[in-house]
Image (cartoon, rainbow, N blue to C red):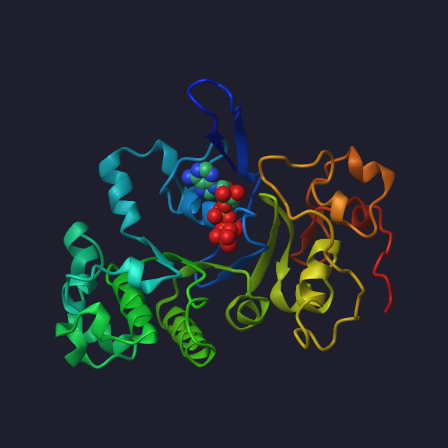
Length: 319
Ligand SMILES: Nc1ncnc2c1ncn2[C@@H]1O[C@H](COP(=O)(O)OP(=O)(O)OP(=O)(O)O)[C@@H](O)[C@H]1O
């Protein structure tokens, strides 16, 4: 898929319009019961990808298949029915919740919007399954702690018994102690319910606890994908190496590398030619400036988009 936004410009054309290639070629699949983490620096297109996957905006090219249905090919009633089976949980629960509605009202709201969806659990059950006292149903968001609010958001997402949930940085606004509890809750719910999920995060420590597989995004492309353990133990792409090397004690078994991210932060309105990572890559070759590498298989269930890996050269600079 790709997603381009036209931005800027003025009525008198003194400022030219630019095309932001927020998603510049992402291809992924998520199975039932599985969590795929999408990681990368701010602005690399993670949230845009998440919204595309949920059909909340149309891609510029490409398509999203959900349970055999192409989202673009569905009329609005069918899309609405499918939407009930997909939910989004995002970073800031205060923004996600309506300050004027009680917790109980908000939790059942998705089943009011999608009356045919799910098995319609009572509010008390929905609260209990996210570890909240059912007595909180009458409270309002401002009367809850940050962790309780995020539990309410998750309870609401569970109300239609979805098959697919996108978690977009669901714990990054929370205290570290609360983060661990919410991550455990998400894991427990997934084990009990078997939904598929995409977990968007810039925090690799969180990803290690929550995800089965990880997709690493750079300037709108997925540059590496594979099982979390394998990718963290032996990252193949120089960008993944740099992300992992920046987090102390993330992967104790990993060969320490000296890859440090340098150069300009990525700008999706001016994507470099060839491999988009080449201006910051410590091992870029001449070809990397002109050749955009395709993502190719690189070991069991793994893939990577880097010509150094594709050509079989080992390039981890030893510490
Ligand atoms: N509606 C929009 N119109 C124009 N540009 C957009 C729009 N949505 C996103 N972008 C741009 O697309 C790029 C990718 O944004 P996105 O929010 O998907 O990245 P992200 O990796 O989720 O970043 P963050 O972690 O900071 O949220 C950014 O440059 C952003 O400014």
